[in-house]
Length: 372
Image (cartoon, rainbow, N blue to C red; front, side):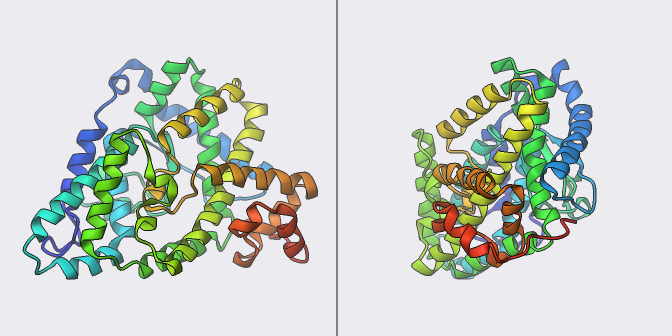
């Protein structure tokens, strides 16, 4: 893989090196080459279709095009997320690169930043089960590694990690795979079934990054500190990710909006996964306990979004689900539909703790009439 679109001398992160480090840290799961992996592609293709139908009927959120599943190993997950992360950080790294361009230590700094970034991605690659990524490149945009890159808008699953969890906890494969698919397909439905959601989310991310203009040394130091904390068994990304490590008050205000949105989306995703799982997934309660404990131990949220701080910390996941359940308990599913009416209807961080206050504010709004 080459660094497409990157000026090697000015980009503050050597993305090719980051990819190599991440692949090394991620390693390979022996189960992936075993007979147990043979059923993954067929299973997830069918189960993703099944999950999409269940989610659409339950939530009313329908995408224009059917969901497709992509089965990845850890290295392919790294490749996809290096591309996604490089695309997302492009405006920020361009500004940092200009500052570094004439620095004596620029070459060393680029490699150091890449090594730390690679370590973080490799760490996550060993844990992630499924992902719906808004920023994955189209296959024809790939730069020589098209065979390992998932198609744009695909729901993808990291097969080796799923197999390892199934074996460790003796989960019934079809049930566990459907359960994972329900969660990821719900996220796709949120971004594809609500007409304005994708553009709104990306605009917030762009606004957040446009406000960030740190000294390059601060960024490199932040990467190093996060990697050190992870090696010690702690995850400082729970407190807002890398951006929060050097964010100003103005930047934190935007970050709060993103975290409130992601809390709602994750809470809604967990609610849908749980409610549908009770009916359609054997052993759902035990799966939920295992995955909840696993998240708490690792601090793993939504993979690379947590790395950047564009995802809620663990407490906010819980608040998001409590908010969704409280709203539905008080007003039925149609009450929650008001959240999909317009960006202005989204709950703030404060309203996530006060669902009655949010209901009072949005009650005059009409729910989204047509979910797609």
